[in-house]
Length: 155
Image (tube, rainbow, N blue to C red; front, side):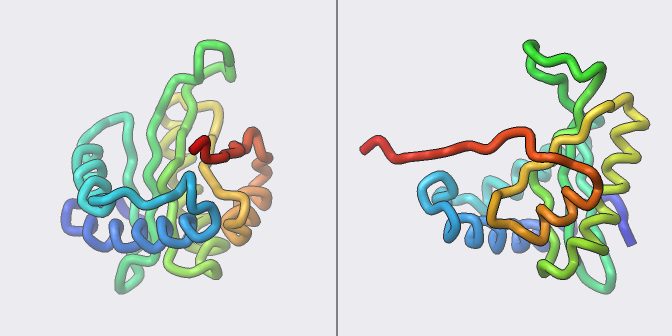
């Protein structure tokens, strides 16, 4: 069942985020180095977004939290003009890689439905290059890569 998150869901959401952060830190330890207090900060962030009309936090609850998606409506940067609002999806996590094709797709579809209902014309989902199962979902829905970041420590 896909439903809006409530405050009681946030501990489980943060557990999924912690696992994702650890995975991404293993793939790119400089950019994705885990900050002290990351879990507490993430929980506060989500708590602050629960009631914002331009923000959406959905959970997939199938006898326990299987995944979640956090989306928000944003304006495109002033140098781009997609023709309307953008659905920006940053935090989007499922319990296992095998859940992307089912749970992940259901969460994404609902976020797109919500965004369209608020005038969005473009979907933007953050996904690391090594997150292959998630990338398969994105490309399977017709999405293409718009940008990638390259990083190098300067010290």
